[in-house]
Length: 235
Ligand code: 6GU
Image (cartoon, rainbow, N blue to C red; front, side, top):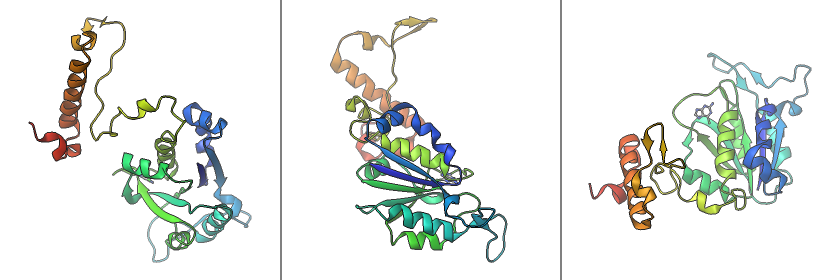
């Protein structure tokens, strides 16, 4: 998969060189290219923002650098890219969004700052790819960079070969619409706290039902919004 990122803070993305995704890049599974939006400015101050028409607080990102950046990045792109603008005004990112994006060959993240990007950029971008405005959730960040990073990690780990053991992708919070069950390792007793005896029983059927029960209980307590009719019928 190819991922292009456009930002005025390209160094935010240095962390993509470490850990799982860094290794995936080294192994050629992931081709991440980070671009400084200011490469597409031509004035002495490399200006990327200006005051909003109609007045109001804050600054708006100018359309010209964004237009040129997106033209340049998508010029050689064979399959239709998804152009993602992280935005608190977008659709909410979920595991389903991550799964959907993981199927694509080419993602472009346009990270805005300030009060936002001139609206015409989104109209233009729609000529170059499939545009999505995506939010991490109902809170405000200073810009799209941290959100893009979260999305890149969530999508990147779903690319075949990135995560060593693909089974570890399945039994996870949100993959089955439930929160994950609690995990324990050795020692069996630690600071007076015991591992639930069922996990030491060797009875795989009993372990599986205990884990499912835990998933349901936690989801009910912490995230009742996740419980559809599939899961809450019995109780
Ligand atoms: Cl994607 N961007 C910004 N700036 N704030 C956010 C967000 C995105 N998602 C939640 N808050």
